[in-house]
Image 1 (cartoon, rainbow, N blue to C red):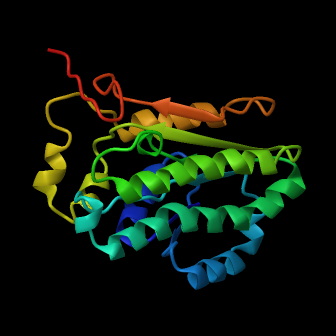
Image 2: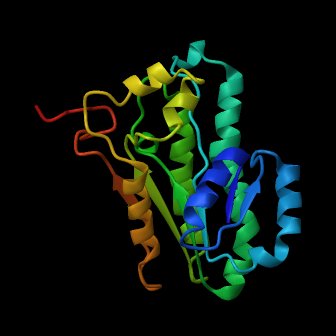
Length: 223
């Protein structure tokens, strides 16, 4: 099941994935608590069969220093990156605990481990994701439910930077010029590897970076 706000993108992904497996898509604003409650109520039977929850939704908005940024951007990042993750996790956990199995995988970021200039709120939200994951794993000790986080570096071929620069595709493209980045496929394969571990193994955290990005704040392309 894929849940997102944009129906057009959901349909595209559904068409692609349906060649290999059954795919259910649901258009939903995950920051709307009432809409999420209605969604969960309407899918209550199906949700009992969820084995894996991937909290992949997240965004960064703006590239200005915090003092020059819009507080509305901060609110949107907090609502999407933290509250929506908590809300969906809270909804699926009861059935996972009942089954004594399941896997929660949260998308963190290298930005949640090392701060960078003009990333005040985004870095804070991703640091929160890492702490939520760690604490939740402790809370769920003895339940059989595994909890993991993936912390990627720079990933091209996504809409992340387009959203950050609010539709300015030229600025977004420049972020990834001059060095080798990762692709969304690279990250997806890492996630698949984590989820494919036997039930006695939990990959607690995986940091995955482009070779040309030695750290969160450094790019070093091969010359």
